[in-house]
Each structure stands twice: as structure tokens, then as C-alpha cells.
Length: 562
Image (tube, rainbow, N blue to C red; front, top):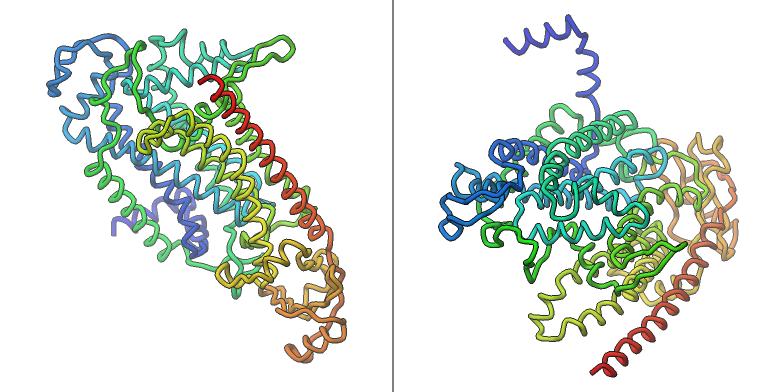
């Protein structure tokens, strides 16, 4: 009764009923991968809720104080106010340790959900027109999530996070021309500076969360305006969305997901220890921890700094310090490539059409190869960040391990990308049955033969408004046919025919009485894919050769030094 009166009162004053009806009638796809974005949203909600509680007790100051809390080994020691308040949160504030660890776990899962969500968008082509802007928003959210995670990780002023801050300070300083000014602006002076913690606190609790909330709202608004993309399937076309309505089925499902996420986060916060700052001790510029690894989402940066040789050079008389290339340039180029990829792919494919149906990763071998190679590259950098731990476990010199990892980083990503590219082409050659069903013949076709040409749908837009059968000739001279219906996905025959007449006879047998139309095939993409395979193979061979020579030179120098 009260709810009805409230809804009626709002409708009389604001006219909310049409808006509410439109919103509740919106359809969302049922595929599980679309929930990755919601996991990120709910982790962000958990971060805000737990962060508000932590803010009430945390003191963002490097002013020296004497610890007098419950943790006996630290009692009477001079520490910063930030570190003392963090330890007090862990031992003296009711539910403080639970909330602090839940906040940390939520940050880790938040970044992980964004990465998985972007991977799903990348490999299925969901960034294509008209969703390029939403891709840019998502990449910006990833950059902000990384920045906010690192600032929050560094706020306790413990020894481990202090070592990470020292590294970031050096990386920022290494930027040519403006590095010193940027470091002064971000840290408030020469490291360690008193304003550093307060500035990171404002950034962590106000600036970046506000920007993230704005981008999340913009992202959701564009999804509602442009409608959801979806995977191809029965009844799914470029003009509709098949799935569940927002109310009631989708609402119940998403609220259940929210409850599960909160349960998992608080379960981890209560049962799995993370970031025990009382063990690390307070930050001291004259000390460092070893082994020392940051949170997983910045491990690749740490690994790049460990792996890259100490090379310094000058450009137009300006010194480019060693940390710049692995610390600043690598990350900058990575995000620049992410921002530019939708436009580069659209220009290469010469495809100005909007896309509502998602593609399978195997349907775009070049994109799959690039993605697999990039993921392999950053995975190896992440492993390199633990080189000291691996060397100790394997009982081998860390210098020899680093030399081996340098060779792997320069070769394995190219090989992994080439394998992904060829597997995708082989799957297209055998009709996409599955990796387990691939044969030597499919692999041989992927290595030597151009993939089947796809019909140029844009060549006959008026004909495609009615159902019928289309036949076309491939680059190898064979003919194929497919049934097209503007209200359903296209159905392509699984056989190739030596002549147009044979293809027409097969199509008439399958769809008697339907109109037969001949269309031209678009061979440029097939030719470019074949050329790209050869080019990639030559590049992999060149890189492998130079890497082997470099490794031999490094080993000879080390033997001479010994």
C-alpha cells in the first residue's frame, strides 16, 4: 500500500511511469559472459561500502607517533600516523580487519573482472561500430582501476608498499623533459615527502572513485541507448535482442549475483589473510623487503623492470634513463594500442557497417593471434616479477633465470600468437567443429591455403531484404551457397562445389522454390590473412634468430667475467 502510494505520488509529479515501463521491458542476453561486467560493478559497490568504513578510522598522515595499540611487538615503536591507524584498524577496531581485507580482495577482483570483461569484448569483436566509444570508456576504467588500486595499496605506509612507491617515483622521474615536474606534482617533493600520503588519499577516495562512477554511469547509459550485443543463434538478428526482460527475471538473477559476490568477498576477507602490514613493519627509506611482489595487476610492470637491461641513451641531448622504457613507455604503448585497436581493425577490414551480433574468436584469426601473443607476453612479465622466489625454489642463480626469461619473452609470445592464428584458420577450414576434431589436413590447409572467401553482403543490400539462396565463387575456384533470411542468422552449406551449377542444384535440393542469387566474393581479406601468416612466420624466425644470438652473447660475456 505504501509502495503504491509512493509510486503514484512520484508519477503525478515527475511522470515516471513511461520511463519505468520502458526500463523494465528492456531485454538482456542470457549468456554467462555478459555477467563479467556486472561482477566488476558489484565489486566497485563493495569497494565503496567498505572504503567508507575504513575512511572513518584511517589517518592519512606521515607525522611520527608512538604506537600504543594491541599489537605487542610494535608497542612503543615510532611509526607514522598512517601506519599506526592501519594496524589499529587490524587489531583494535571492531570488524576492522574483516573490512580492510574485504576491501583489498574486492580491489583485486574488481580489476580482474574488468580485464576479463575487456577480453570478452576484444575476442568477440564487441568493440566494433557502433560501440567504439564504450570500448574507450572501458579501457579508461581499467587505467583508473589500476591507479586507484596502487594508491590504496600504498596508503598504509608499510615497508612493502614504500618500496613500491620508491620504484614508481623513479619511473615517473625517468620521463624525459617533464619527469621531475610530474614527480613533484604527484609526490609533493623529493621522495619520501610528507605530502605523498595525503595526496594519494585524496586521489584514492575522491578523484578516481568519482571518475569511475561517472564512467560507469556513462557506460550503462550507452549500453541502454545502443542495446546489448549478442551472440549469433536462432532468432537473433542485427535488429533484435533475445534474452530475459529486466523485470522480473533479470532483476532476480542480478541481485542473486550481487549477494553471491558479497558473500565471496566477505568470506575471503574473513578467512584468507592478505597484506599483513604488521609483519612488514613501518616504511624506512634505508630498508627494503626481499622477496617483494606487489598486487597481481601491477606484477607485469615489476617484471618488465626486472627483465629489461639497464639501457640509457640520449635523444636530442636529453637523457632517457633506464626505467623509462620498461616502466613508462611499455604501459603507455599498451594502453595506446588498446585505444586505437577498434579503429585500426575497422580501417583494415574496410567495414563501415554497425554490428549487433558478436563473432566467434576463430572467425578472426589475426585478432586472435594478436590477443594470444599479447596475453602470453604479459603473463611472462608477471612470472618474471617472482624471479627471486622461483630462483630460490629451483636453487638456481637469479641471473641465469633472468637470461632464460629474456629469451622466452622475446620468442614465446610470437610463437603463441602464430599458433593461435593458425589454429583459428584451421578451425575455419574444418567448419569450426572444435579443436579436438582438427586433423593434419586442416592444419596443412591453414599453413598453405587461403581461407574460404566470404560473400560480400554489402554488394547486394536490396536483395538481402527478402529470404533466398546466395551462391558465390571462392578464391580457389570452388563454389559455395548459403541461405539468407533478414529475420534469422545465415546458414552456409558445409560443402564446396566445382561449378556454379552443382552449387545451385544442392541449394535447390535443400531449399526448393527459393530464389537463387549470384553474388561476388570479397577476396581481399583472405589474401591479407594469408600474407599476414607468411609475414608473421618470417618475423618469428627473425626474432628467434636474433634472440638466440643475443642469449649466446650474454652467456659468453658472463663466462668471460667469471
